[in-house]
Length: 151
Image (cartoon, rainbow, N blue to C red; front, side, top):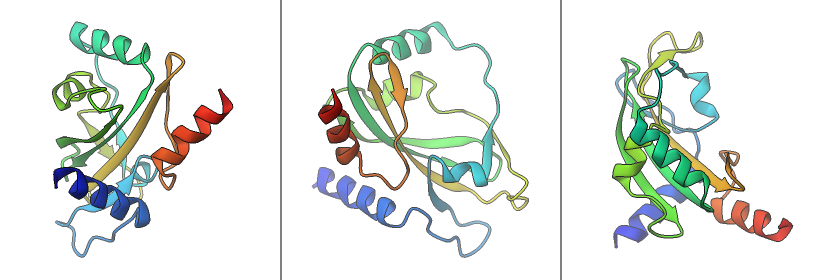
């Protein structure tokens, strides 16, 4: 049931990458690229040793993750949720949080003077020692198949 709910949420967000906020306290659903219209990441200090190890280990593997988080009206990321890991078990929610792949602090963009909070759904693909970020509207399984077909 939990898997079906996660798939439903992912399909809903991909089908409607931008769900309008009704008022300034509502959260707007956006993808990785769309978030930059609202928020810019604030450069983080040096990664912790633990984050460095997790990121190095992820870069040695082949897989994908889909996760979400909220950037609140103060520009802080919160409510980090791992929605899917491909293959299953590729990463845990705890390791995702400890990896610092998600910035902790953001500043509002010029086009977001109201500091509208957003829920961001991001997808990262780890391959050949690097990270790829599929387009927001692209279905992750299609992206993975495209990659598999070319290698």
